[in-house]
Image (cartoon, rainbow, N blue to C red; front, side, top):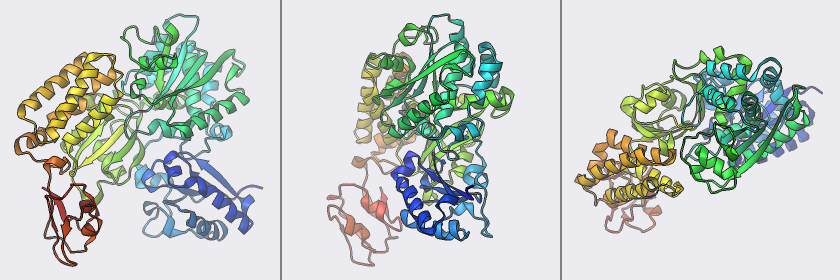
Length: 596
């Protein structure tokens, strides 16, 4: 029987954490009850991107976009939509309905309208566990084209022409990197997929591995053919169990279909892929530390040169590309380098995937053409700041990047422009920071992370990051001086210029960019002994304004009972007893509690 409807259920990690795993069984039970089980195809897909509104259920052929779906909603969707043909308007994502109650197409929803999905082209649309769905979306056609119609050198030239640059942070030309490895003759070469995604809040690689694993395998095989390698590794952190499961399924399916293994497409090309699990060390995202980990050693960086393309895994020429880079490769080969190079800007071709988080309404996964402005991403795609708060900064590049102030929101997203602004592209983390945040505290957070993740091999990183963190703790406690700021900046520049690897070299970036753009906040901590963001506990007092409506919520929820006041009367806080936990401020329905 031909199904009359397809029901796509988002099964990415975020939606799974919100209960989507149970939705399929609930659908099956209700469809059986209605006697239409054979008429409806249920498809578990990867992440659709709009994570803040998950779990999602999308019903085709209408393309109805149901958001924040709960178990109790499944019966209604089955009874009304799938059985009677009536859309359940109350469950449809707000932006997916027009004023006349017509359903907008997937790409007409504001969140997606400005996106161009190349790396994410299949995520949320196919079942990642079904190789035939990937093949139906032109999967493995690029591999066939490469093996049957192209030489390794012509593949490399196509990648150079495309202008694809590494999406893992460095931004080096993918084609040139391949050419270096191609020119290094050896009896054995390797290609590695770097899926050791460690930036706080970043989940681009995880979503791609979970939603479209075959595109990573195909990209890895094309890279192997181009440089003359017959062995590939996918280095993925063990904290990604769903991604690991999807990769294992995809590898087994590709082998069953003869798309991985010996004599692929009868071309004589042999290729095998092995998964290696990382223990979660951030430094293993650096390519030489990653190589050491695969070899069974402690993940620690080494001096470069020699670069991995010359002497990498077990001393052999090795190419390392991250997940997003590899996901682009099949699309580039299949549709052509000229097609890809028309997207983006002169120096930054194609698109970039970002995990948009922080103080933003539509947190999630977005893919935009290079050259899109930060303002467009935050306000037109991300929906702006909750509660109409003012935007203070955007942190790109995670702990290796920097904070871009609101005054630079019209900056186009390109490798060079972000670096010139004191930040970097990084792997794709984009954290929105509003007026209620403290830049000193954010610096402290990132330094705590890098101190914890430093491998300890070189002194500037091992000792310098600790000393910078100590200075930030002194400043945030109200015991700092202007001299501390000067010494902090001096030390940050020293660590940046003398550390061995990218972790240490980039660790001072948040400090340097925030001192440059938000020095007044740092000076407020050391001169005025105040935290403008109302975050650093030693420097704040909580105060109830005249906007208080006397709802008593703050008093009822105060863990130390330091708030007094009668119903419908102005409340007061005993600052001597207050532990500054912030519960009262967060729970106040009229924002009548402020930090001073």
